[in-house]
Length: 416
Image (cartoon, rainbow, N blue to C red; front, side, top):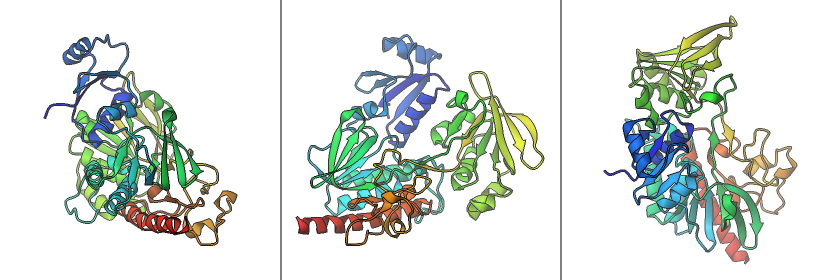
């Protein structure tokens, strides 16, 4: 298969890593060339670039893009358009809940717009192998599951768009107006928020300077082969960290899982713990924190602190994959959509018990289970307060949200 995009950039460029991840998850074939390699210099010359600005992308049409935003790359493949008329439902976030909702909404005949700001699948899309999802006894990668769902939604008529992040949501006559980056707008009769979460940042000296140069948030399969024969550290004790460790162990000489607690059992499924225990090149360092990262141009060493003894140790390291905590993507929402103290969206019966004044419900009817404090706006998946942080749960909530959206739209039609 011929590449649709050629990327030339620094071998450890954080921006190149982000672009490669987005293309891989969107199943867009690409080839990467290190800027200082013979092929890299040749392609830069053909593109009329001297390498002073990177990354440089050459598309299948011959167009040259220098460090383009994600929506510009998406536009090349027809994935950044917006419908002129208002849709029945706008789904914000192509993560498991949003993809599920898009499949069911479009299959029921609702005009459906699926908006995504970064990469299809979100945090789940970076999972190396999901083995506890119904129907896949041998497991499936998060990226494969997400792209299959994306193609399924598209085949039913959902309109996918990576036109940039949604920056504001406002009530409007007959529905809602969505404001996107770059001044673009879209309109919908109802809205479903499925923006998911991102990994919490790890605060330690040296990490930010080495981001993309051996330090990564999320475990993308596009990078695994690059660490063949190396020592890779993974921070996190949930399933995503376990999945990443097992997959990385196929390539790396040694994988070390670092957790603050005294056992993986607190947050990780037993099947993964058993697999980690049985894999000879995976070890687990409990009661340990990353104190610092070192390296010139790339990660070379980590300083680890044993929280029981307060002792430190500096060890060689080629990669650090960080998979800790969850921060919801909700800072763009209007203040009158109620959230809890951590920013997760309140829905249904949780609105009544909230101390947040923004969570007040003003209509005579009760809110539907996945409806926010703004009637007609729903939330599902990891972004929702009280949700179970599992792919299967998010998929289930996405399908349930479609039923509730349909009920809402039918009521609005009767009242209009």
